[in-house]
Amino acid sequence: MFLKPYRPKSSAALKGSDSKKFRQRVEAAFPHVSVDQLVPAKAAVTQVKILTHGGVQSMVYCVDKLPLFFELDGGQLVPTLYTLWSIPDILPYFTTHEGVLPKLTNGADLMLPGVVPLGVGLSMYGHYKKGQLMAVNLTNNKSAVGLGQLARSSDELYMCGGHGVAIKMLHLFGDKLWSHEPSLVQQIPLVKTKALSGEDFPALGSETEKKKPANPATPAPVTFASVTQPEELETGTAALSLDTQETPESDEDVEEEASPELILKNAFLSALKNNGKKLPLPLLTSNFYRLYVVTEAPEQIDLKKTRYKKLSNFLAEMVDQGFIVVREESKGVDKIISVDLEHPEVVNFITDVKANEANGAASETPLFHSELKEMYIVTDVTAAFFTKLNFKRGEGIPAGQIKKIVREYVSKHGLLHPLTKLVRPDETLTELYGNREATLGEMCSLITSKMEHSYQMCSGKDTSGKPLIQMSLATRSGNKKVTLVSNIEAYGIILTEFIKLCKQGAAASTSVVKLPHQKHEQLQIQGNQVRFVHTLLTETYKVPPKCILGLELAKDGKKNKKK
Image 1 (cartoon, rainbow, N blue to C red):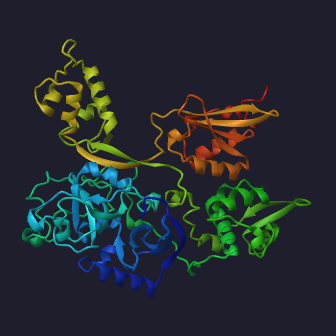
Image 2: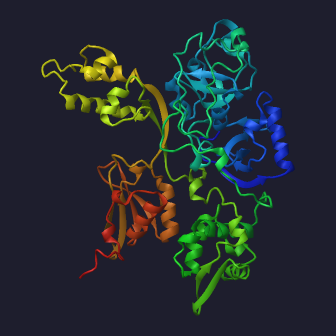
């Protein structure tokens, strides 16, 4: 449901009676959980109206900016992964194998062959009704990785003979709802558990399971407030406390169908809110509108369809309202010389989700591709080995790097026999897997079998081991210069969105050129746009300057001036 980007249509803070009604809905939907655990009385609740990629309208309810619930057709409330990680027993669970997660994130439903039977006979899949909400976790981690609705009742699932769809997935780790608020995204909490067995996980719906106060397949509660829990996976993105985040409240609800004037005004306010401190004043009014206001609008702005008809008329009204001060440099040339960022409307304005860079991952056109990485976590058993290679206990290591790390350790300590090509274990390896000689491949398998297997959602912002972005200039017909940019896709940047930003910001024609005998593509931008591309990559996409070559070719650069 949320694997593809959705479009936010409106956002409004729930206050007073509306907030109370929402708490009553939550309490009615999940009576076995205290409503104060889900929605604290003084929490800031925001209702976001969205349109999914499939054209379905839905509501997302954020508590202190974090999405905790969304609605299905008919108004049924569904908890998100963040709710399941905070209160694990809010839904019953089905368990699947760890190798199934990548298939689910690619859009597949959970099939019956992937469900781990936890009993025999009619109790194999519990006693649930068709359409009931179910969470999904993995055999090696009790934390939820997704949730959905049962495609059939438990009895019908049993009669299917292990074939067909078990759960129609609605929400998954790594989808756009998970990244709705990028500053608060969480990786899957790692809840260590014993190997799954009939004792640990009795059959769903069995007498043993009913006697337990919580669902046996659910993890122990994991709070967002603690970052140092030993059972959580250490990631680059720190978990933030729900109690420290505040959502500004608005006195008026956003209109369901915004008028052209309101869209223009909101884009103007969003430009001041997001870029007010970075505006290079004095600034031409035309440049301010083209570079800042247009890019903040959720849809294309046509001034002729507004009551202003011209930009000068709109800015004159903004001057009268005290937002900006405009000075006429010469006839027909106006510049903004100052802005009032303390204006009440600017201070209280709720920045549009699509325009806000912090919410880029939830927009209709995200900046980066996301990738699900297979990880292995350093455990207590393997800590002695990995600490010698500067890895900490609890740190996640990509699966593709394990063999490289093992080869580096073997080479450093001279453990490879020159004739048999087998690794002779030293004291550390002997404690790890015993006194036996093994090949590098067998050694990697033995070590990873002692580690915790997990997954991590990564974006293209990771620059390690990637080729440098190369900018160059070329001359085309008519002695016209063009800027060529290579290796952008290696950083996970979505080319279509990058081209759109180039066309809007530089007002230059931008196209993709396929190079002969090469797999990668090259961007071609009209004119010398080296400085603009460098600024776009470093400020918007946060690419380190050391990863970009060719800045000296900029027409205003100091390096190309003759002394």
